[in-house]
Amino acid sequence: MNDANRIVGDFCAQTDCKQARRYLPSEKEMQGGCPVATTSATYKVARFIQHLF
Image: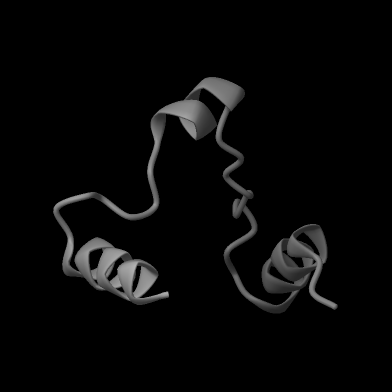
């Protein structure tokens, strides 16, 4: 199982990039964002498949 905190920690330990930090969006950002825009091809394909089933 992957753990994002461990991944970042390992990355910092194994590279010269010691300033790496996880970006965690705020609750407001989570509510306002959409991973698939309604105008994207991915959204259109997903909607098409959804209508098939």
